[in-house]
Length: 353
Ligand SMILES: [Zn+2]
Image 1 (tube, protein in one colour):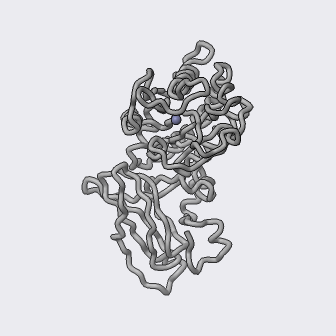
Image 2 (tube, protein in one colour):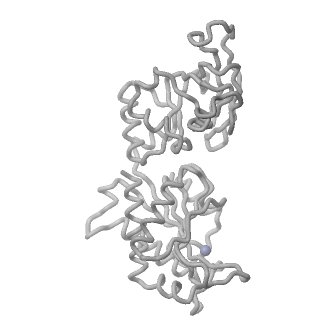
């Protein structure tokens, strides 16, 4: 996104960012994350604050109650533009998607504006402001706790969830039943290996050295299938939604289209849809390949049904190429499967911190 008339240097750094004013700067817990470009995907809103935008175009996004109405209220900042008369303008509506999320470009009258995001819910008006979420789920929860203890009233349905409930991980073994996926050189279908790894992951996440890990880390773990049965992609996503998943990890093994040279493609691939999942995808790839000595096939942005929802960290792992004569044999060994799982677990637990 580009902002005409804006100093090139600033434009480079802030891109689609709203610059927060000094009143917000006092809020040290979130300031660092807010100002770094790499974290810009991770925004939610909380009351009560206004911000000063340095652009005549800006971008708001976050999450709200889907039943609410959202408006942007704009005022030219009289402190910086005393010569401009611009009354308070309420009424730039923001479209909220059914899942409560919103993202919209707003046009502002001048470069310096006091911008507020106003939520109307059940006839009550509230000013929402924004902050950033590129932090672990635990850290996010701690920030929310601090904000709440500072008598900030929370406006997000998810916030209560972060405060009260365990973090939910859904493990999704790809394919199943009539859907075989690809096959190993020996003709064993991918769905079998996917389930093996998913179950290993489930067990390792649940119990470690005989101790109940789920209790220590306050997590809940579910599998989308526990046996060889067909589950549609929609049902997998619906299940994750019902369980209020924070993380969904789909397990697969890779193959190639017929016209590709199967010997040229090797390694672990990690797929995601949303930018806020990318850092996790990268760490997961690093960790799994380090543990298993498998090659890195790479991380890829794809619009897969199971990674598309943005209410969780959706990730799809292709644990190497099943069709590769050497790699296919290697990745289906129990001891390597265990290494894939322990590599993954390190990063999952890190995300939970
Ligand atoms: Zn597959």
